[in-house]
Image (cartoon, rainbow, N blue to C red):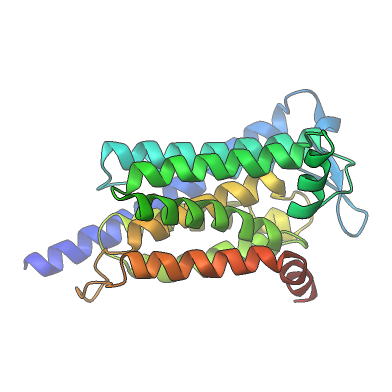
Length: 277
């Protein structure tokens, strides 16, 4: 009876988190479409095919994800703070790059670090260091030991960067978030609802993204990626749906972090592959 009740509560928590994130994201998306800050033109961009799309999905996904992730069931006060910090900082820094970096052709770590060496602080550099610092701060809130704090920070910031690398064609980033988050729904404890949050937010705007009416941009891609990374950090050490411990702990975090660093190092190839799919 207890096991069955726990399973029912777990499924309910995941469903509630998914629906809440989807609803909050759609509400924010609708509000931004009706009342775009600074005027409609400020939020319009040309996509890869030359079609005019809006950036509304990005901040909408960031806001919806942050709101619901910070209120996910079973989280400590420190974990709630980490969720809000990681997602809002990733979305905010990404949004700054979306708006301030419009028209800047430089892409990737090397280009922005090269500009920084020559005394120019690009919006991409602000995004890089801002999301990195927020990821490390969130990791410090989630973990106790220094090595674990560092690994958790790399996973959160690296996940944000990975999803942004995939945002090269309609639906690529949103689809990747759904695909990466779905297996996490099998986690028991707070990790399951946390994985449900970016899944719900991404699904809420996927149709408009695929229909080339909007794009996630840096704001949405980074925010959703940070939420995935946060859920993964919480998930390491949480029991799976079968009740078996996930085992891994620091080793799992280390493998996850190493894979994300490798993806970042091969960023151009990752983006090209995503565009070719």
